[in-house]
Length: 60
Image (tube, rainbow, N blue to C red; front, side):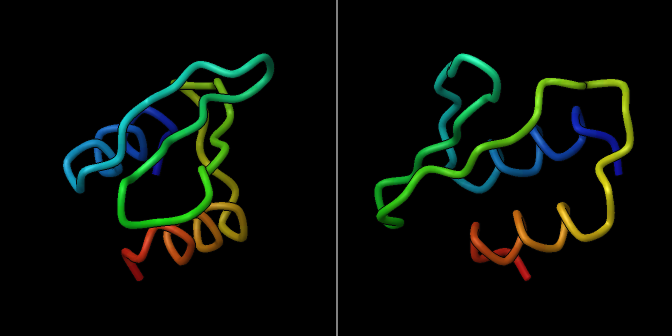
């Protein structure tokens, strides 16, 4: 999955994009901490990183 697809998936599930310095941070009213996501829309998300982000977002 590419980062751009991950952005779309998070946004479809209620996460809101907030700009950070090195990462894009996604926040959700039902989750206590933001999720940092890299700024590389055309690159593939490493498998371990993708699994961790999906787990934190409650999507897996």
